[in-house]
Image (tube, rainbow, N blue to C red; front, side, top):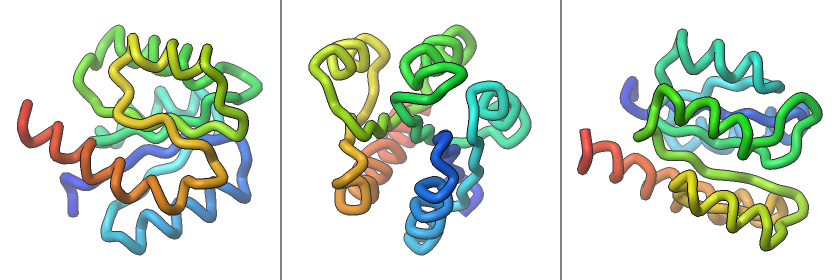
Length: 126
């Protein structure tokens, strides 16, 4: 289970709790952060294998946060959630090698599949 660490970053606490419980029920160890600064700290201290980021947050959006992360970690797979998917957001996500871009309303269905894909990428490209 130690290789199944997932960092979830979302400013909506209720959604963060809900998705954390769901992903833990699939056998993953979940670390949460509710802002970009906490996410960067958690990334350094917990070494997650996969990121799940909210696209829209008040302090920094998910794309900008991932750009910061990519400065030091080019390989960690990332999944992006959004309440309002836009073409601009999906175009920005392509340049950052995001595994999946998932609308929040379908997150419970699509997240498990995306996590499995992200973990497969890790073990194929250690």
